[in-house]
Amino acid sequence: MDILLLLAGLGLILGGANFLTDGAAAVAQRLRMPEFVVGLTVVAVGTSTPELAVSVLSAIAHNSDMAVGNVVGSNLFNVFVILGICALIAPVALTSGNIRRDIPIGLGVSVLLFLLASDRLLHLGATDRIGRAEGIGMLLLYAAILWYTVRTTPRPAHAETPGRKQQAPWLSVVFILGGLAALVGGGELFLKSAVSIARHLGVSESAIAITLVAGGTSLPELASSIISVVKRRPELALGNVIGSNIANILLILGASATIHPLTMGGITTRDLLMVVLSSLLLFVAAFTFRRRSIDRWEGAIFLAIYIAYISSLLR
Image (cartoon, rainbow, N blue to C red):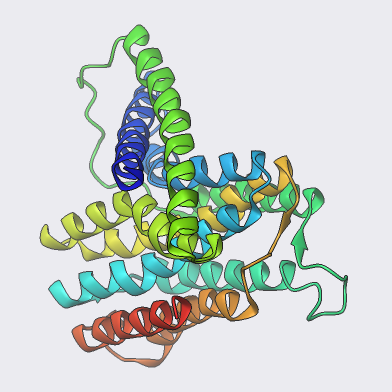
């Protein structure tokens, strides 16, 4: 029964995220925001709304293990599984924007998470935690990165379609409100089921968050990335993954910590170092190999690393 409720909750989360993104994009279009800005902001954040719903609801319930574990697991899943699978389908090319801006920012944000969550290691406190002040700082940093990205991203060469039919305002409101309701309701159901499954299996909530919960909330990124590669636009897959990982740390953990300070609990230094490693591997691929792409053999290594890590986590 818990598994069925978990799947039902996940379905509500994914459906709600889709409706919310569509409604927000329609509002942005009505406000005459350029399409490329909508793509970099509304749509990019939209794929992270499942993680946002789960982590924020976990923070409200004072369940830090689930809030942090969901983000840590999602970032690992995005790089090692999604990019691994995409690279096996077709090599994922790295654009100049990825190399000069996105990958370095992603690595810097991962290192920032490690530093913020390692109070004991750095002798800054007796408990590893991310407080409200740090959470607010992360949100401000995310806003600054979005602004920088919009300012430095070239506008598309083709003109935007002026005659596209706009969604009715009332329908946009229905989409947004319905999406939010589905996200909250589905998130509550998903969380309760995940916690119940963890207790029945005798597995820690942090382990369930890093594996089952993170994999479920990362399904939008997985689907959109695979579609991008199949349509021979692999650069979109890489941008989607990096953008999602940055949003997971700065936006989602920032919002969660602002609501309630997050303690690491079952999230270990090894888990945080794995997040840094995932970003570091992308950085190495960008700056050391001449092909400037993630090839099939590298994709296979990514998947092998993930399988080894999850196996050690569930022992």
